[in-house]
Amino acid sequence: MKVFFLLLASLFIAACGGYQTVSITLPDGFVVNALVADTPQKQEKGLMFVKDLPENKGMLFVFNQEEEQAFWMKNTLIDLDIIFIGADKKVNSVEPEVPHSYTYTPDDEVAYSLGYGQYVLELASKTAAKHGVTAGAPLGFTVPDKK
Image 1 (spheres, helix red, strand yellow):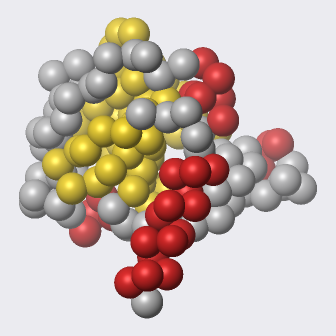
Image 2: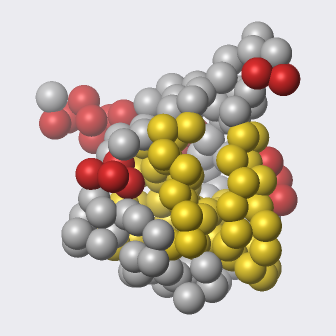
């Protein structure tokens, strides 16, 4: 079973080639390895069409400044927790269990989340609550320099 999950994680990373990764320490010490979406192209694609996301994987969206961020779940096949993080790397808000959509889901039925931050972390649904990610909680990470 462990080999299966390692293979699955490898396929996830390979499918998202060209991404840097960052280790993010959640409030309880649990570490998530997140792909870094630091360009408009990577941010637009996000986790679209990903069919499975292990608890210790995610995606960190990096923006130039702290401001209102909007995330639309079109073609996102898995439920997610969406965490809005300030420039100080403290959680501003958490949108838990944001529902997935499909390619055939009408646009007006696709979930979206709004929040304020310079960073946004997407995790598998229910991961935030399980590991103490709440408003005001600090997260440990260092954003890699752009290649």
